[in-house]
Image 1: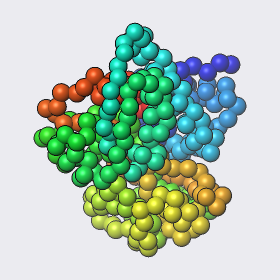
Image 2: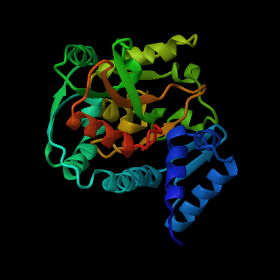
Image 3: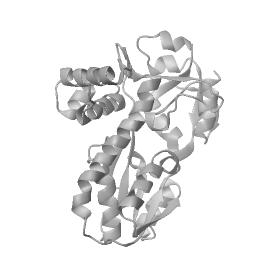
Length: 303
């Protein structure tokens, strides 16, 4: 049995949303169409990609691995469709691109590599900085464009933005944690256990916003700017945390397993996107980078 691009696209949408019903809404198709596509994909691969629960679906270890491959497939197809639009054009120049820590470590590298192959005469001058520094650099013209967590942008009157990827946030737990037995998990349940708080890229401020909507508070036992430290601590049973699928890996550096579960009600996704100064006239090279990234994600918020 062959695998279709539609099956991969529907699988990615279900993985990102964590719910078949929500994926159907985002894709503007019926829920049964998404269910059938995922089942056909699982049959073709001979793998179970999702654990199905009352509150939605969560990726199996095989599903997590296939999600990375699926994203690469869809990005490659988007680039192949883009090629006829740029063939014969000679775009060159330098683009000063601001990136935040999370973007630099977990999002940009594979897209940077593809961009350099597609447009070898365009040089990307990358600058890692805080969100505040990136915003100011865009405003004063020392950066041309940025790839950042767009939900955190403050100078929205001066900056335009476009979402490329919406990465679902889930609860990370060690194996055999008591919460894994729950059919539904809420912030009230999470608040009963020690919590490891990530601080990089304003992660703590973001967490404060969705915790503030509840009557509960996390029992923070440790704060760190290192995603790998969070991963190791969760896997070792020191605490639990809520982080996005983009930075999730099923194993810690020590080889210990990390499980994920959805938290109800829905927690805002981590949105990665492009930002640029509203009144700036982009150079051909900057425009090429913008169009490349936008087309790679088909402007849908899903890779």
